Length: 616
Image (cartoon, rainbow, N blue to C red; front, side, top):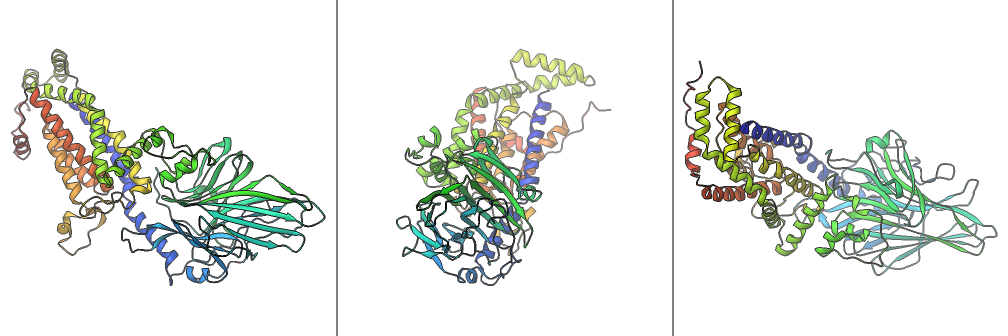
């Protein structure tokens, strides 16, 4: 019974890991390579792409905010597209780029703190790109007329005039203006903070004799087919929190089947990648209509947009509306700051609470913490806390592993005591098998009596494995979705804890100049993990059944290959956890009077087993 339960727990664990390997880990290297190629396409001077669609600004004759197609501009390099019209430079601590005066769009954003690869000299991450470049991606704010309205309004072809001098910085907002020649003067003031938040204030001055009714809108538009990682545990696509509607996550494939509309008060919406996002934040106290839409006219285009209630501007008056745009990296501390609700765990480790900052409703959901966020997010906070103390996320993983072991020490201690007792009674178990060689039912009955007499829990051996599964998953999720782990180094050859160990046994860890296939990337850390797992299993009672014993003997090798393509940080965690478990189990077994002979048990694995005399 004990071995069956243990094997059941192991088989379930293997099934979980195989599922992760098949759906998540296996395509990870290809996804990362494709993502780098996508970013390089945005910065390359010579690489072309499919013709993108034209601007998708709403028109008076369609639902405000709907994607619309027009004449597609000729595809140019990113640099040529940026040089094709007047611009205002963006120069903030974490962003650089520019705002196009044609359309008044925020369409050129690069992230200063993040590079395409671990090489600090590699190009900066490009988030936004203008129309005419290979992969346009931008944000636009504006107005549409009420039904029957005929006022000329600024659109994607309007050339605004810059009223202020110099670049857009946190200390120097820029103001753009445009006169429609019919009595309406539009002014747009754009400011940016020290992180990734733009604030766009649109003013409409009515110099005419008739009142004007306009509907303010904002949109984020992405042209072309975006590359996604394709992992079930990660959402990439259109996303938003729409008031009482709550969180909405719509894939690119799903939105291609038809637009989705919502209505609410408070929230945000946009488009998210694994590490980066562009999100529109309407006034949190005003109701708005939100939409996720797509069109194929003139090229594939995806769009998130919102439409506010009507803004009425009387003659001689000025109307005003303010919206915000997040365009940057999904850094946890920054996202929490914008939500203004980091929670008690976040505040405990230093996340700042600013009562004067407007709250963005549930902005933390821009990061895909998953269903088990109550485990995943505290896990991140713990890792981030010790990273700030130690300066290395790898060391932080080691410390958090120790803390987790201490938290589960009573449970693990009870398990190891029971396993030690089971090892002590192995001679009695062998005698039961000899007395009833052909009666399995009687064997099980006698074993249960023995367990009851010696106060042994046959399920105890499953507990260390079962306990590790949620912790393993939470750490995997943190390593996978948080940008803080991206390109985070450990020591030696591990330059990115979120990527697999780059070494391989099959080219002698780089000594042989051969590019090893992905499925043979069995690095140093996975091998160390396999060895520690093998040693730990030698401390456990040996299964009496030869088939079960063979499964346990081969399991470390299987896990070595399986975990080789997982993030190096996860393999380091598992290795360190194995070492701590070996130490804990060794101490408990010595106290229980069990002989600990790791070398002897290891040698027994390679010895030829005698034939079972009970078989006929």
